[in-house]
Figure: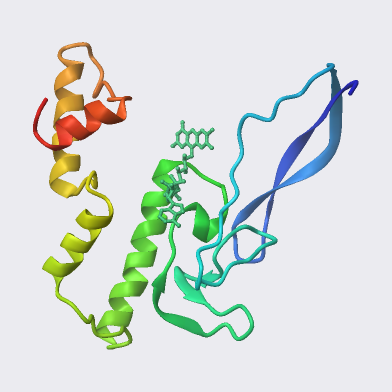
Length: 176
Ligand SMILES: Cc1cc2nc3c(=O)[nH]c(=O)nc-3n(C[C@H](O)[C@H](O)[C@H](O)COP(=O)(O)OP(=O)(O)OC[C@H]3O[C@@H](n4cnc5c(N)ncnc54)[C@H](O)[C@@H]3O)c2cc1C
């Protein structure tokens, strides 16, 4: 190991208007004897759900998971976030991405293209709680949000984030 060669990227526009980073011919070598890779992301497959091994994403069209061979949607299966797009963008990008997927899901619901649930909503909630007793629902998230805003006090910042999982769970349960 003698160093790391880095290159300046340029943004190029795809035919669908999306931007892609491409290597330019501007590069430099940073000398060094040891390199530790400390960031990165690669999606992992879920049994029974199509997976694109090359991209590390779940093949989809606007969030609807599709069979890669045929492009046909897999009924009732949707993807959002990095597993849908690959590792790009920030938290805000995922909000828009999730809204797009939910829009597709609601459109399919309206066209009666979803499978009829075999159990009701209460049964689903208990199944999730049984599998993950520490699940945080919307009420719990709202409590965490409130605790983080309260912790900011009058320090001229919107929130002080809770960074400890036990503290988050305590706040979610209302035991601040
Ligand atoms: C080092 C780093 C720094 C970043 N800093 C910022 C920043 O400062 N600001 C910002 O806006 N964005 C930042 N980002 C980007 C941000 O983290 C991502 O945009 C965001 O986390 C992607 O959200 P997601 O829901 O797609 O995936 P994730 O946040 O990765 O959530 C996926 C979840 O699914 C779970 N999961 C995986 N497989 C299964 C399974 N089989 N069953 C059940 N659960 C499963 C995982 O455990 C994980 O909790 C950063 C990313 C990295 C890597």
